[in-house]
Image (cartoon, rainbow, N blue to C red; front, top):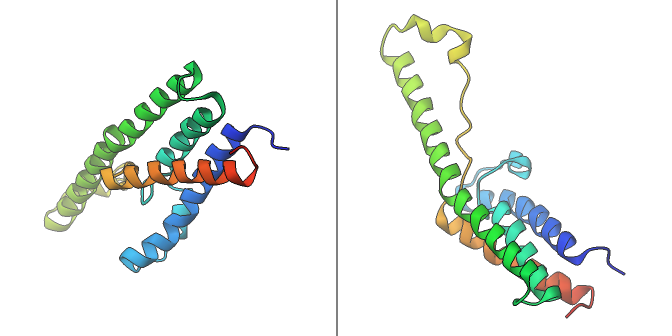
Length: 154
């Protein structure tokens, strides 16, 4: 028998979303990047898959009219909005700062930038494009339903 379907579905969706990022990157950008297994950003959004699978699983077990579904739905909405908004913009700012540093180093005598404290690069792949969050959301819903069928809940 299963331990906690909602938790298991959410974790499974998160793990599978992280795993499929690698072959999707190979297919779309011809780039082998196993680091995607443990990084943020990319297609599909594992954060969106995680919270949408949780909300779906809670809806399956408790019903969509339950308070627990309402809580998990609102939680999912905030996480997905954050992945598309604030985290995405932070990544864009990081890319701009990295480019600015590269340009300053290349085009002038800015010896201050030789200081090791200025050599740190910002992580640029933080958030998601709307399509990545949409794909992650659908992926999470799909995994929650498939897992529910596999363990006999529906």
